[in-house]
Image (cartoon, rainbow, N blue to C red):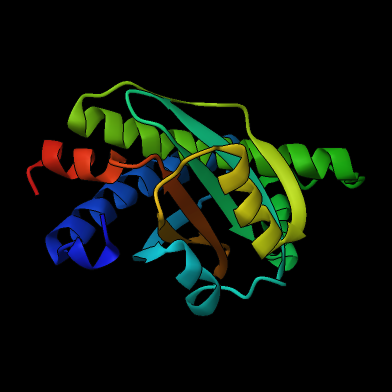
Length: 200
C-alpha cells in the first residue's frame, strides 16, 4: 500500500488511537512516579522507508532505541527512538529523587520500562477499538546510529511493509517537553486490514 493512498480520515483515525494510547500511558506513568505527566501526539506520518532519513532524521544521528515486537492477530515492530539528551530527561522523570546513584543498567531498565508502558497502552487502545488480540515482546535497547538501527529492524524481522508509521510523542513533565518518536514497522497488509476493520 503506497503512502499516497492513505486518506486524511485514516490518518486522523490513527492519531485518535494514538491519543487514547498516549493518554493511558501518561496516566500509568503518573501513577507509577507519583508526579503529573502528560503526553501529546502532535504529528503522525506514514513514509516510505527510503524517505525517513531525508524527512525525519539523518542516518548518522546517534540515538537510543528500544525495540518491541507486536504479536497476535497482527504483527509488526515498534521502535521507540530518542536522542541521548532526551533519554536522560526521561530517565530523570521516571526515577525517584532519592536515587542518587544511577548506573547504566538502571538507566537502561528504566527506559525499557517506560517504553513497555507506552507500547502496551497503544496496543490496548487498538485491541479495545477493533476487538483483536495484540501482545508485545520484552523490550530490547540499542545505542547506535539511526540508519543502522532501522535497517537492522528490517533485516531481523524478514519481510516487512515498505511503509513506516511515525508517531511523534511529546512528554510534558514539570513544564518541559521531552521529545521522542515511535516507529511502527508493520507486516505487509496490517495497516490495510486495520483500516478495513475501522471502516475508514
